[in-house]
Image (cartoon, rainbow, N blue to C red; front, side, top):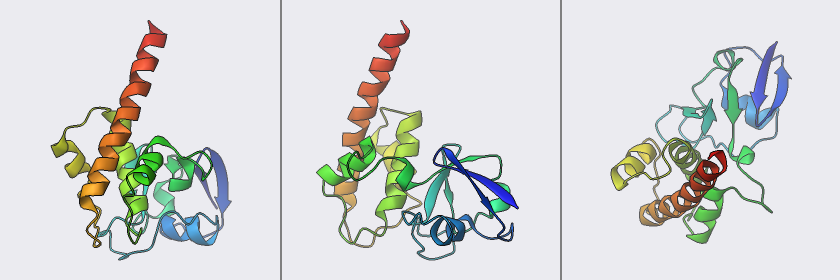
Length: 163
């Protein structure tokens, strides 16, 4: 039995410990944000966060994640109350087919959680493992820059509160 911590809750599974996380998320937990794309860790559509770090859930066996906090797209916000990155992607209409968007959002969230004021190079580097074939790259970049403004504001408020 493997116990997983996902989006702030715990989940026990009898699944083979070598099973990739993606299959447990989608087939057992009904969390469909992470997509099956290539199954080889080359497209990024399956990206989730493990302790805040982006990972390819199609490649990562659940046995490696037992002590880590996993965050999926669903853990960032809801339809009624999207998280800052999700909101920015909606406002910038950054999705066309939408297949890459969950991975892009997860990578952007990880970047902005560690660096609320990334430069263009940092943004492009953080997103580079995720492929978008629709050509919405410029809207995706605008969405990340918009989300960065929100993260920067949150960081400023948090800093003022600690002083």
